[in-house]
Length: 314
Image (cartoon, rainbow, N blue to C red; front, side, top):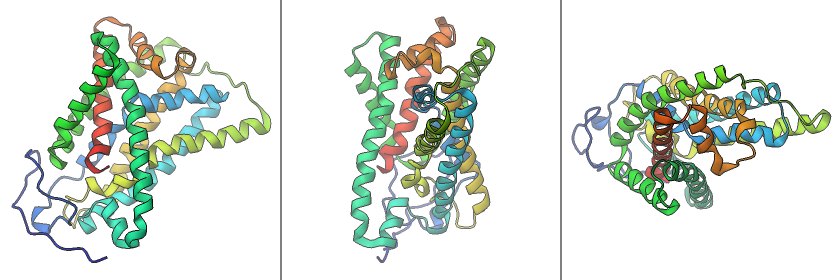
């Protein structure tokens, strides 16, 4: 499929936020900009989600112990992170988003994968929003539907502005949420619950469930693959592919592994509470009070940070 080149819209600078004018057409060289490190914060922030933490908790539901679940999570996230990192290197070379690139390669046969991706996006957003809405319910004592509405409003306010607004938001959230989850990690370590999860399955069952956990953990990472090039297409064509690859890999694989290992470490505390109890468990883990309030706000912001990556392109 031939790709029509678009007319330049004028130079854009990093951190210059405005409503994006660029559509699906390739970004011309005159509009390319950005330092490569921003792709790291772009991909790190969306991984700070309770949904990733809950995937770590799933390890306990499967019956795996801490030392069985740890390598499964690490291997799964390495695989998922490698896929996204590789696809992200296509952005600077082509100036195109991931789905238009697929259309250029496969033509109209890309419609079916596009529909599957659309359905998967709805599923992941709905899964993430459960945690954000629950956090707002605990924090503000508002109905669940109002919590969902506040999440949608937060997403719309940022995603409608487009690429640069999302990049800036994710940059700041990577620092804010990173600090909060460092505090949570310290609380996990000092609580003594980091390696106390014991296996309840053995032999062939344990082997099968180990590989299932690899797939489950990896699915959270390579679910970002349909959007990979969308967030690197504004970089100059001369941008180092190696730097794009490793910054992306570190953000995706590193962030998800961190969150899932927190979930694995506190699995015994939240496994009986289920999805709706994860936000409450995080609040209790940091000790409630002021830190508990900050943790609930962080879950809300983390939900928005993850959802806008899907909304902008999905």
